[in-house]
Length: 107
Image 1 (cartoon, helix red, strand yellow):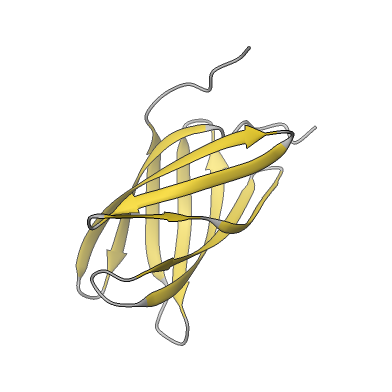
Image 2 (cartoon, rainbow, N blue to C red):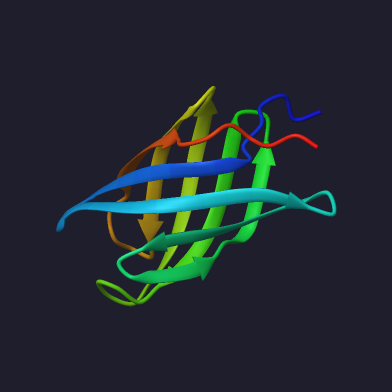
């Protein structure tokens, strides 16, 4: 058992050198696999290499706005809060915080 549920909708704020960027990440389980998408800056992208191990959550995503970047997120979950950072290639890491918007649905 992973112990901490991550399914749901998360409101993220990424503190970048060019300002704060808001994004929404949706995480869900499909056939036992964790999948997700991220929305922000007028685009929606799938999450890749999504892993959840205990209180640690990490994923990668590509964005084209405000510029074309491949981002890697490394987050820690504490109840309904996410904290961590994202990194784009050799650029400095950006602090990321998030709050769960809704509770996970149970069947």
